[in-house]
Image (cartoon, rainbow over all chains, first blue to last red; front, top):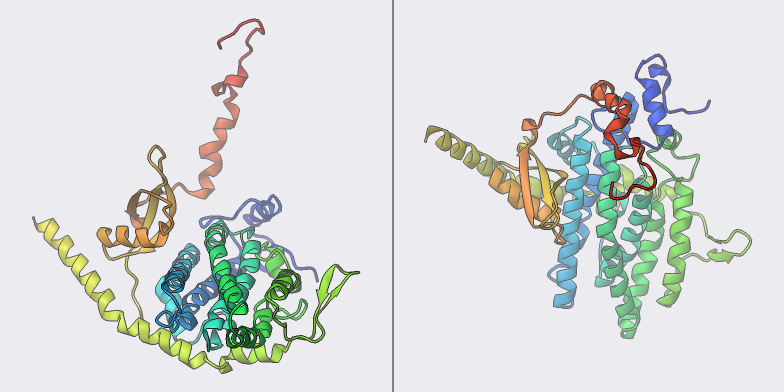
Length: 322
Length: 94
């Protein structure tokens, strides 16, 4: 059966044709517009997961703030982490326009009911990992996010445009770190190579399962939430990244990786999607640590949030009385 | 259960001479903190030089279902545009 923009349960809804017409005309859907329940639910899930990823994404980097090798690197990393917090906030706001609340989303994350990008459950063991995270993890995220700038839901698309603009510096700061290390001492080159060995495959998994194995893809495409398939995006990432690895004179850990002249793309070896599923299900190297750190930060901040609110209420009451 | 701070809409003036433009929203306990948070969230790269914040609950919006009755009548009023008028070719300054 062909998946269409109007699911069967809305077939006789008088508002449905206008929704479908907007999608056809590439007109954005806005918060107060009618939309199928599934469209709303899919977006809330996807945007909140995206926001959670930005939030949890700060954690692997934070240990390196006090260990950055120079003041320049420390300032860059601070700015990048601050951007990630900002990106989480833009995305939470976009999700809230669909009728969920910030509190609901955070509770879902903290209680383990919501997912975030599996990649942040890997440890950042050395300084080279900070370079790799910017170069590969942000690089992969940007490819996905450029696609999402064309997503049919207005607030999500607008948040993506802003995030893409800001995130290009993240990828460059990562690559700059990789360039320094790859031109450095033998030990630094080893460190860079080791980081690439560990992060290459998890980075490829960021695009999700192969087309056809991805459960929500067909409906998301019909709704123009997703504009390109997982495999297309992954191929685009590989084609972009392999020449950059060559420039760094680093070896990509895939013996089957080679340029295919006929396809005009790189061929690559099989991806271990069982690993992806294991990490998503909670059994990655750092799942417990990441969620634990997030919950602790939230709980430790509770008194500040309450005090700020109590202060605001008191001041308001005083202003009224005066 | 976590409770949310009130929601604020943020408007930023890009530079002197432009109007304030809606850039997004955020949560804050009061107006002062809303401005401070807006500065951190929406102007990290010198995107503006003036910020307005408005409680989201204070904004009154038109109903999307009224879009037709509110805005379509303007379609029939082409005489509100200068291109509607026929001016002889030899006349200048109009």
